[in-house]
Length: 421
Image (cartoon, rainbow, N blue to C red; front, top):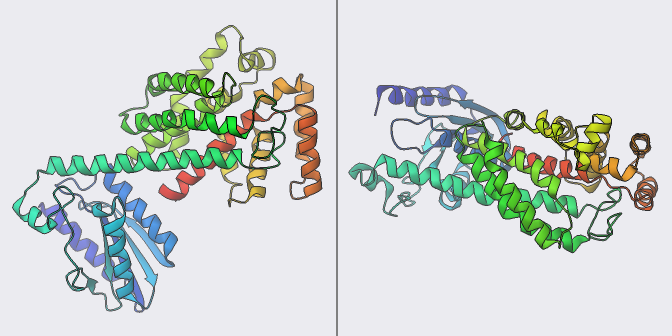
């Protein structure tokens, strides 16, 4: 063990003593990383993940993050009278969370004494490779540092892969099951989409979900952003083909595969490389610098025609600029209520370029008039909401591009809440 690490541990103890206040408990969240390099990106991820969990589950009076030669750590102050109960809860987290073995949740009681498993007559932590007492393996150096680190990295990637599947699926379903959605498909209505219904959209979701998860893995494993979009394009092509197979040729989510896929790539890269949440949008912007080259092609698609006729860049422009509409929508997304989600969707319709709407509007003038009509709708008034929804269906309108951005917004909000705030 290097002198720098020993000095860092002494400094951490000193900081805890300085922060300690009578009547409070102190929790130190520290990654359990073997070897000399304690500042792996995985260590930062673990500390952030478990700090956020404690922040959500307990009333925290003080939280501060530190970096040191002994790795990153957080010091949290909690007002509580039952240090024993809290230590037992933290031990349960360490023992049952899929990544709990790689984190230390050290608790200092009202007298600033560290509570240990041994003091509570609880068993030692187990080695995550062989299952024996960890301190025995550590002293005997039973496992190489390389094998231990590889185990930790693999477990984190597997954990995040399963979590991403949940986040992606939840975002897709929340959007699909949102009612009174201005003519879009819902659980109870086809809206203005006579070739679609709830079951078809569900089938499409299940068809594309595995490939969206694959995009996360590609982003997570990438060492650089250069050409990452091109490298992932074959996965997007397969996802589109599987979607069309599941829907018997109906285009349910083609645009979404592109824009949500970019967001997922950006998230994977950010989580692996210890980046901040805002960096995800910079990642997307950097990956998308070539997408506007497509406008030089013959205008065969709605998006390309919109650019040729009106210089509307649509979803490509959104990606090229790093999802500015989604960034602004996140500021309006404060809870999971349906009314809030509709307000977010309305915001996205008004600030983004929706080429799906442009096609259904039949003219650029009508396109702008529809947006202006929506601008004056009070979504909190059920009568106005129902009336605009009926109007959208009667006029055969679709806000599909904005719905795709809503899914991206829901997805990124869940990512922000769980891994970054």
